Length: 259
Ligand SMILES: [Zn+2]
Image (cartoon, rainbow, N blue to C red; front, side, top):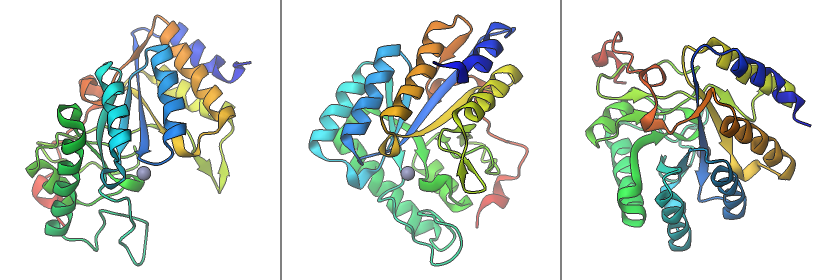
């Protein structure tokens, strides 16, 4: 049934110290029904989840629901871009990309923070996930000025090394593909297991509820159940990650990250 998780189970069984897992789900504001179904799984298994919320997609009814979820202490809310729109005319899809300067980016970020705070108040955590996991050094500088303390992209992104901005890269994309083809569930299980066995840093899993169907949700449920049940698995949220999961990459000259 959950044979795909056997390697993860084995890695946890032989772990010398507890393995920290965290989940980031993107695009709150899209498909509230699918979001509710995913959050229900988190509560069922007492697993923390960091929810990246698109500011302009936040409506009153969704805000009420998100505040209720966050009040449980398991669901953590942070900013996901501003309107989740691609501004680049060439190159890779990006909302906070090279065609947008520091001033434009900072305005979008500030407007997004204001929208989030207006709806969610103190539940907004000082974390930022850029749409498509991409942004520039200007974004990092603007985030610092706005009081954001953690940037979350994926593990292939080169850290900006800003001394005031920690980074929490996701390490497993649930919907990852290779050469245009989705990884099988067994391959996803092996990736998670390899990171759990390595033990040097937390395992960060990126989810997208809006493209998660019933079958996919059942698999996520199996992973969350294992994390809940296994004595060597620990669930965390981004701001509570141990130092090994939050790199400030201070060895990179911060002044070179602009531009
Ligand atoms: Zn997104």
